[in-house]
Image (cartoon, rainbow, N blue to C red; front, side, top):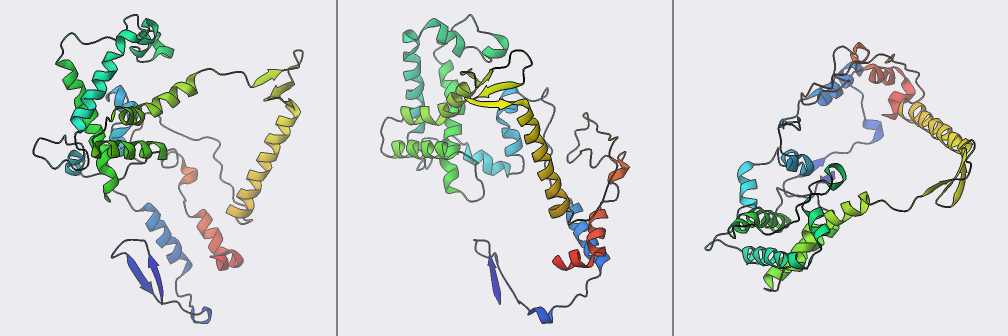
Length: 317
């Protein structure tokens, strides 16, 4: 007997392993292909989320949160972002509300010390696209407005602090962000000032984005100003003929992998010179492969039938 364990309780499967001489081939070729086709074609339960970016907020278009949480239990998600009350068990984030308020107050105290041009850029949603806002970032006229601004920040930090202890919900976060969240949790548990930890949780990605969009030193310098066929790339001399040879070599490798490793030497050709594709179709799962106008893809068992018809390839499976 052999055992297959996926790592969780109740997920252990035992099955009998037969010797090669005991193996039989009672399954017909057509039945095998039909079984594979049934598994591939089986419908998976999906939650349709709006794809038209005109009907969802720019913030959601950037974060894609609505796509990430679409298939999870709504009540569970609400519990994750619930802001602790005075009598709630706040073991994961003790004092989170006060820590966030302190962080915002410290940021507001820096406004008089910050240059006007920097404040203008901070108050510009997309400086590269829409230019710099002439109005610098400033305090709200109503002091109570800031109390409303901290609410979503507290909810998000509660989510980030609660997720590590859960099995039914995980967030795909970079290791740097996970380390920052752990640092924030430790600061709250030890009742230390958590402003620096909060700052690192939120600004790491923003700092990376600024670095990536900032123009750096040129990496390409053309040495041939007559025919533009030779250049320096990071100090290495490159000729256009070398690029052509590189593309040709890559093409040969791709063809070799496709014909020998994927198609197993079987010569199959499908004429797909004229494909129909509707960019306005927002149905879940739609693509040019499922478009009924592309009849060249109607028979999806061509490769399977060809493998079953070849004795040597069939034996490999």
